[in-house]
Length: 276
Image (cartoon, rainbow, N blue to C red; front, top):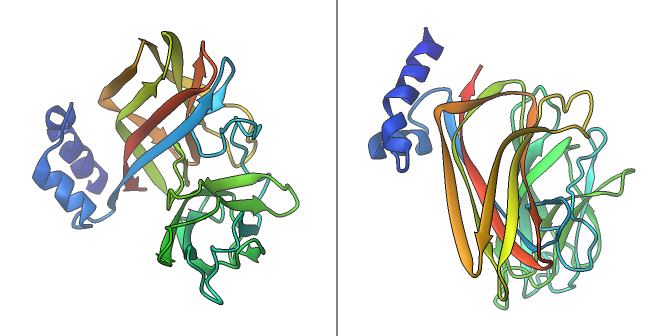
């Protein structure tokens, strides 16, 4: 009965959510006033999308080679470090000092978070072991910059970069999210924008979901595609009616491919999470 009421609430607000939202209902969800329901607004940016698959996340930068985001092979502790000694919490530096990390410790438990004190270019290990880190943000910082260097979470053993904050950004920009088996996600909309500084280009955007991250991490299903052709800046938003339902465990991400190298692509999606 509880889930039926929630679905009816979702349905009653569908028309308002496309393209906007029912202000009172959305406010109650954000404020935590509706038991068992929460919201996620996920966004990402890749500043160097080329003519091959590139996930929308902070690791896709020129010369980095991290076009595709890779999850840890199992729950791993992560070493957190910056490329700048100024991102230090003890002794305090002029950049980022403390960092909050959000993720899943298993595919059957709810999201957890922890706060760590940075040590500049030195590594600080997380307390928790994560199967996915899908957000990091600077909590406290000095006077010079929110974070002077790029801050990376590197998985133990695997050596893969699970999350990155680019210099000066203050938090991750990754259109990637992990859903545990404890919740069901409903996606009202997802969106993308493309910036090209020169000639016209064509960009293909794909919404992807891995429905079995607890057993394998490679295979993603294509759930929707959008094509853009632009000579400048372009934006498009796709809304689902009924909402797109994603049952946990799952990983959601947005991928881009461009006809012209160096394309700057931003994208994201909104989720309503309902406790099972």
